[in-house]
Image (cartoon, rainbow, N blue to C red; front, side, top):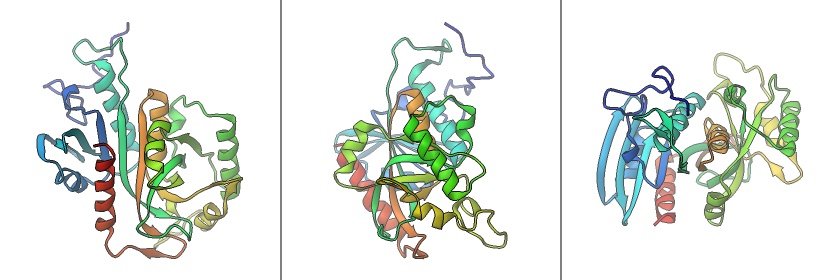
Length: 286
């Protein structure tokens, strides 16, 4: 079995993985990821006890117990690139023997729940909604560097989205863990999340610099294939789903809708929407 060289699997002096600064013992059965580092504290304030804390760059980790169940909550920062780091290093913690620098014989499947904020691109999905993503549709180029396998139906839909929005590149698609989606969908609105490689022009916003795709929101709003509609925008979901598919992990993305791009509105109290979502997620697992 091949050994991972130091330049590929980079470890800190204490043998923790390079960016997350974590060791395998810091993983729990359920891992909650959040973008904003301050949101880690919004989750862990509900813990009965905090067992471990680690801060490095934008990656803040708390491990604790809630109603007798242990959770690990980690902040990722924003964007596809950070999720690519996060997913690779989590998988290394689970499935690589860090001392021997070799793959473990027995693979571990992680349960990862993304709690994020998002903007609706359908008029009938109001601010305050909690939405679970069935599919992530990536407008970023992360998967151009990975051998993701997509079904014929996924390829067809991705090409139709490209044509409908006159995009210069073809999106990719990946779905949520069916096991976790079934667990969440009974109490959430379900949808399909478009993951964008930025917040302003890549999401159809224009301030002083015009967007190359001025009709992007309208085009995404109108697009549908049979009963498949695009419902909301974020900056991470598709990367989570695509990498989970390749690694074999269980991942779900749940979204606090804090803006409606069709109506041009934004929540007066976004933290309240996020807070109720956090409690809902924690209670699903206890």
